[in-house]
Amino acid sequence: MMRFKSKRFCRSISKLGNIGNKVIAPSPIENKKEYSEIKWELRPGGMLVQNRESNKSNEEIITIRVSTMSKWHDISIEATSTFGDLKMTLSLVTSLEPKEQRLIYKGKERDDNEFLHMIGVRNKDKVLLLEDPAIKEMKLFGLTRGDSINKPCCTISV
Image 1 (spheres, rainbow, N blue to C red):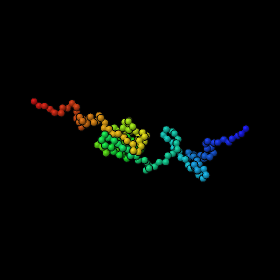
Image 2 (cartoon, helix red, strand yellow):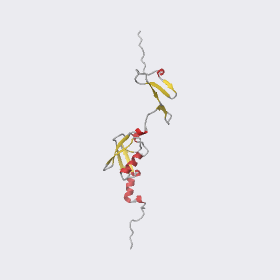
Image 3 (cartoon, rainbow, N blue to C red):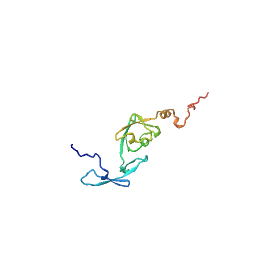
């Protein structure tokens, strides 16, 4: 009967050193035997994950092409912004207030509190900007200035 040596598919715990909330693991290059320090963070849900190294100054800026019916605008914004932030930026470019705007991405209207990167908006993606039809209709009737519907537009004197 022949015996074969078993191959290990994972590292043994003896190769890792545990120091408090930090784990020292060997580097990918086994020949140099350098050890790197892994830092952990506790997320609000209670999940323990490896700490991300992100700098506020190094946040990703993406360019979004916002299309209206007749024009399009290229807007540069941080990837971690919300659709509400995008509406505020668009209000500077267009004459529409943020409450008058409806942003549609991938066939769905997006809320102001949804984050761009969580929805999947990437660099050079297209977003459709529409004017809210209710507000558009109110503008046509002049109701935004506080005019009443029952007020007659002219009086006839006999």
